[in-house]
Length: 341
Image: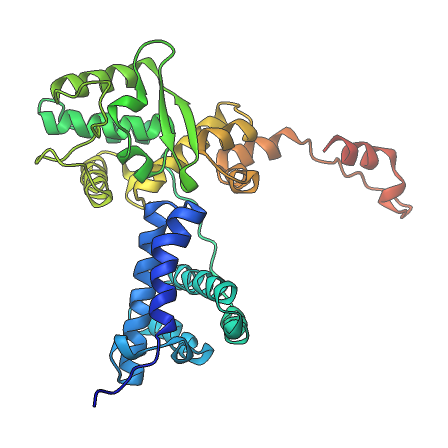
């Protein structure tokens, strides 16, 4: 007689979470769904090793706060993940258990215990970015005599022009471009939020030439940036292109050698360049597609030269010697100075 297996709540909830709740009810972007999937796959594999049971036999009761804590330690200690990556994985687990609590009231107590597992404080790193002349140097080392070099040059120029996230750039199709005045490109950001970004005439010309050379019809849904196999370029491809260009540019530009740069650094570079040009933070926030102005505010504290200019604009207080000691706060010049700040 075959052994009757009890219904597996975990399997049902995982299936509904990824096939219905996230893509259909919430409209979560495919990239976020893939990130959550990777986090839960890693978690379930870890649980199977700890319990010595196959995944098909696991159920909600096996996912305890204790094993979640062990998993987070495993990520940092054994996999070498940073605290930020650890928090991303935990965020996926939290999101799944919030869903479980709503779907299975009898599991609310366990879900609440999982949700009390805290995020770890992370170190705030200094934002690394490229100065305008460094951007020019990076672009100058690209060999535009080849079709690959012309693609790389157009890619980097478009990234700096728009300040877009790497995936936003890679998702640009011919239909998203307007290469007649007023030049602009349509971008889809996090949560599929749509925005339009203006293009410099030089960038529009480069994109037009790239489409012509690649035989891309401007009314099509073809991705603009492709690899040598005519397939869409990937984030890893962009990282390789930038790393190669930076390595060449470092030969003549010493300041690039000490910087820890990656594709997202170009986005930071655009923000700082706009700020230096006098563009207000609200406009920069819309340009970059930030959901919260607080995210944009961090660029105000980045540039050292702007800090130097600010401190030089404040006249130092003249200190005069006096035989009689009195409170400095009673002196009008100090109050005037404070009010002028």
